[in-house]
Every structure is written in C-alpha cells, then in structure tokens.
Image: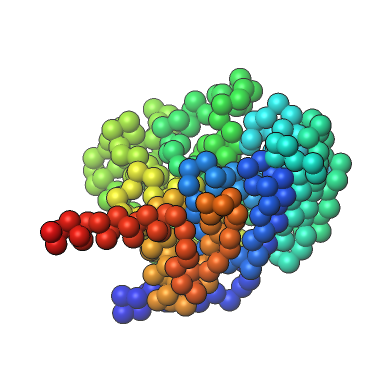
Length: 354
C-alpha cells in the first residue's frame, strides 16, 4: 500500500492456470485459460458458477490429499471419485454427466504447468478408470471453499452429520471447512505474509471471533465483551472464518481459496474492503477463485485491475448459454449483470432529474 493506493506485484505464476470442461453437469463446454492470482466467475442464478468452483476445488483437494496421511495408499482416481461423490452428493458420479450428452464428461486442468485430467461416462458409479496425473502431490498445502452461507454456527451439526451419521446434506466443501476450523489460532506463529491482512480483517469486523474450549462454542469478542455467535451478524462470521484460517495456519502462501458469493451478507463498503484484502493476500501468494452475481464485486475488481495493472481473468455466462472469458485489466465485459446495473442507474438518474 503506497499513498493510499494498492500496489500489487506478482513474481510467481498462478498454481491453477487452465481449466477445460466438457459435459460436466450444467457446464456443457467451458475453457478458461491464462488464469491469474484472482479469478472471477459471474452469471445469473443457476447457470453453474458454484458448480464450476466445486469442480476445480474437487480436483485441487484430490491433488492435496494424494499421498497424504491416511490416504497415502489410495490412488488419485480413488480419492477423486470419493471427492466428487461427497461434493456433489449424487448416488452415482455418472449422474454428473450433462443430461442428454452423447459423449463422456471430461475435465482437464493445468496446475504448476502440469496436466491433471479425467473422464467418465453416465454409467459410472464410484470408480474413475480414465485419469491422467502429471502434477506433483501438493500434500503440504491446503485449498478451501468458503460457501455463501457461514459455517461457524453450524460447525458441530456439520461434523456430526458427516463424521458420525455419514449422511448427505452438507457436502464436502462444508465438511472440509468445518474440519479446518477445528484448529485454534496459533499465537506468534502466523505467516509474516498475512500479518497486515489479518489486521485489516479485524478492522472490518471490529473484534475477534474465538473458540471457547469450555463451552465448545464460537464467540465474538470486542474488547472485554463476549457475545454468543447466534447474535453475531452473518457478515462478521463470514469474514471471521477467513481470519481464523489465516490465524491457525491452515492457509499458507501456496493455498487456493474458492469463495462463493463474497458479497453475501456484507454491506457494499465491507465488500470493497474484503476484496482489497483478497488482493493483498493474492500478492502474498494465495490464489483466489470468486463466483458472484453482484455488480459491486465486478466493479471493485475492475477498479483494482485498472488502477494496479493487475490481470484479473473473468469468465461470464451469456444469455445464449455460452461461457466467455475476458480480463478486467482490458475493460468491463459485456454481461447481463453489468447491463442491468447500468440500466437501473440510468433509470434512477432520469427519475431524479424529473
């Protein structure tokens, strides 16, 4: 930060640099190349934004869990099949193939400039036989998915539902996050790269969210006062989750963070501040994938790209069903969300002018 302006310098290439999907649920055909440290998916409700983030997340978690701990003896295809099953919660993963498609589902991504790809047909149950992996195991890094709904209040319910009851309901994005929040922040051991980001996150919510070991519950602490999580706003809890994952070192400079609807439950001013922090964390190494249908998110990232010269790839769903990739560094893209926001602004101006 220099003179009030965000100055962003990236020295390393992004971890996940390309994604190509065919016949993957609502994503009949999508190719997104030249990905950056911050990447944005926009489109109407139900077009597949969250679905795309989950596809990428499942692939990254497979690479991270491969040859790690209890899963050391499992193959990448076994881990991936289980991840897809619990993330999308279909009785057969073959149900993920686009309805009516005459070809198999296929997914290809590039991570650290190396290929990870797989394909399977509609009759597949829980076994993926066609998988190619040239990516080194990422067992020392963690990706995370932050859903639109906050998780702190639901953490015990999520853990019981999945770990004890083994039932559908909360998918793996929720389970992974609930498990990641188990680790309490480690004082004095935070990554130096994240110190400024955590300070600014605290400034947004005006306090700290802490886990009380005695009661087994999360609390919001402001000064010497403590408040139950149930009376704390959704926005505060959402930002507190990111701060907790930085504080307990679950996230490191090689992590990838997927955020579904960063604008959810946040005032536009808080959204702007949060995205400034995202840019700062991206400068420190973390790669971000955001899915949104908010003009505030698009507009703020557009300003970041224009002011700093930062490349922010954006892929948007058009009314004709096509996914189009552009870059906010090169200008504001044509999209129904942006077009409707401009139309509403003009209508308000005309009304005010009589």
